[in-house]
Length: 125
Image (cartoon, rainbow, N blue to C red; front, side):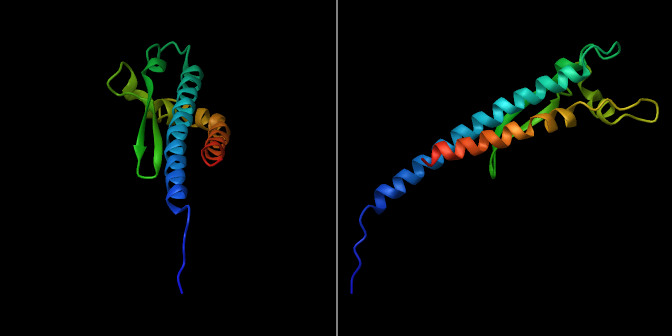
């Protein structure tokens, strides 16, 4: 008995192309949404008399993690007032919290999910 398989190489090549496209599109989705979270967080904390430089300390980076693209969003401790991020977000015994990073992420999570779903559909058409 023998089995003849035709089209396996073409199918494998198409699968590789789809995975490559998915990774590229997912990276774009993560980057766009990280930018949205960054801007929203900065807007939420802008206009504070004692935090004039803090909003511009909020940055993001996108990298490839072990499971795909990921973003790190938050204040850059090397920028003016950046080291205050944790204190501002969560407060202290002397300062009320000003939640801005968590709520900004919550505001955009649905966009991220929809974007990833669309990237998957487009990649595997």
